[in-house]
Amino acid sequence: MIETFTLELPDSGSGPISLSCRACGPRDAPRLVLLHGFPEGAFVWDALMQRLAPRWRCIAPNLRGYECSSAPAAVQAYRARHLMADIAGLTQATGEGPLEALVAHDWGGAVAWNLAAQQPALMRRLVILNSPHPGTFLRELQLNPAQREASAYMNFLCRPDAERLLAENDYARLWPFFARQGQAPAWLDEAQRQRYRELWGQGLQGPLNYYRASPMRPPTAEDPGAMALSFAPEFVTVNLPTQLIWGLDDVALLPGLLDGLERFVPRLQLHRIPGAGHWIVHEQPALVHDLIELFLSTSVA
Image 1 (cartoon, rainbow, N blue to C red):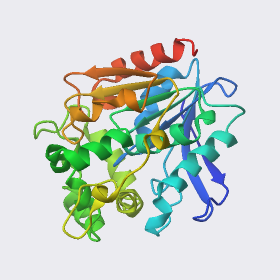
Image 2: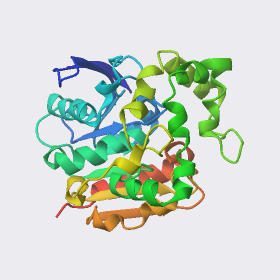
Image 3: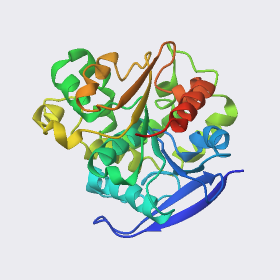
Image 4: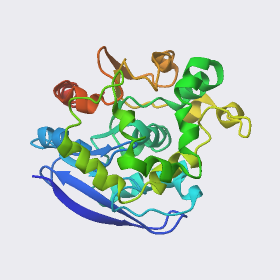
């Protein structure tokens, strides 16, 4: 049974924020928080949460800008420090002590990588699905032309008219984000499409502001993007037990992003999944559940 609630958070510097959340599982069980990416919402975790719920309290917020969560208009309200403050606030408001795990995909993973590096006391372990670590993502954007080309869509999403263009003709430019080899995937049936329409109909400005607020994107003639970035490795090092589940057929995030991860994530458990792509949560739900369940069931040294 999925519950819904709204969590009011204190002002982190961009104004008060409320997060609309979905949850299930015993209220006194160890907590898992699950973070979605673009262009999705908290509902994408429903099936996984219900499978995990007998043992864990699962909470999936709609990130700021999505669904009924607060959607500040200012681009700077979507900088990393504000996104991390939202999840830190949610963690502190929903129970005592650290999360059993933070589970995240895509943009949710970008938030989770940074939160795990900078505030590790909030969680006991980290689970990431097809979301690049900032250390290897920066390297690949700076040095690998193939990754820059694969990430070029990010600059389209930064355009001031992106909301209008994406919404045209029943979101004709958004559905291809989910396509595999030019075909709509089997999991994206009409009922699922309607859930996405309802989500996107509540606004695309907030979701697109994640891309506008981040310099981690390919350079253009007007904007150096990732080429102007640098940070010390220790700033993004995650020392928590970390499970990374990676669909190798991801056309936007290439396998080179997995090279050298041990430098940044010394306690890494990496699962390369052939035949799965970026949307592995939908494509192989049983495998994702089984891998996460096994990881959560192992003791933390």
